[in-house]
Length: 301
Ligand SMILES: [Fe+2]
Ligand SMILES: [Fe+2]
Image 1: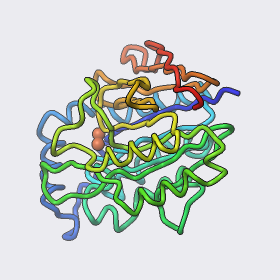
Image 2: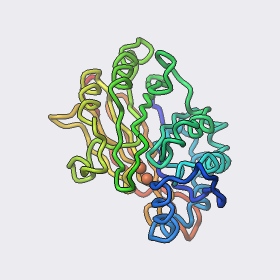
Image 3: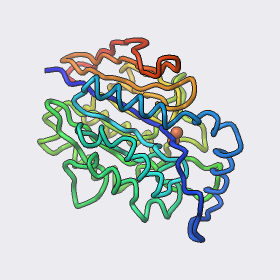
């Protein structure tokens, strides 16, 4: 039986509040605001709300079995941003099963994590099997798939530090979760914000990398996970399994960044996954399919 997923990420909706409270001021957030407001990034996401409307319409027409959100819906990690984003995404949240993980712009500063705004507003896509009552990881069984959500984002103090981390405790819970029969007996697909590799196959740069990416990759290989879906990088790319890595890597790119405007539709078959890239066309205000790649999955996955 085939399963179709819509993989979306990095909406970066520029919807932060105009009035900040005293506790909202962080060095990192001020630097992020400057970056979004006055430098190139604001121009890149100027049409983000309009493109999100088109994205929602397209996914409603395509009717996937579930939606996967790989994080970075916000820019500065304000609760108001999550409320505004979920208002835009409401037709998807209410009509499709889904899995949502936060990105570094959602868990932007310690206050964003402590308030749990991302998790509260995306509660409909935070349902699944959990261990020890922990928020992450969790797994959503979906026909013969198990969508396994891992939080790879962590807040940082310094503006140049955009590293992610899964952490030893979450990694341990992930191993236990992958061993649970309800997960283990299905084809497992990992969902994070951070990537393992860049488009050219190299690891991420020093201040942008997932610090425990190799440890996470080892767990995936040991538990025969079929694919790792992620965002963070704003241009889409994929890597099929190879001699050294048993799972595929799929980056959907940013749905709302100017001239990228991309999301993926993934159709899982018995031995392969068809990866269809859908992009926004400004002239017609709609998403259309631009290419399709077929990725063979490793034997037994
Ligand atoms: Fe991003
Ligand atoms: Fe990111």
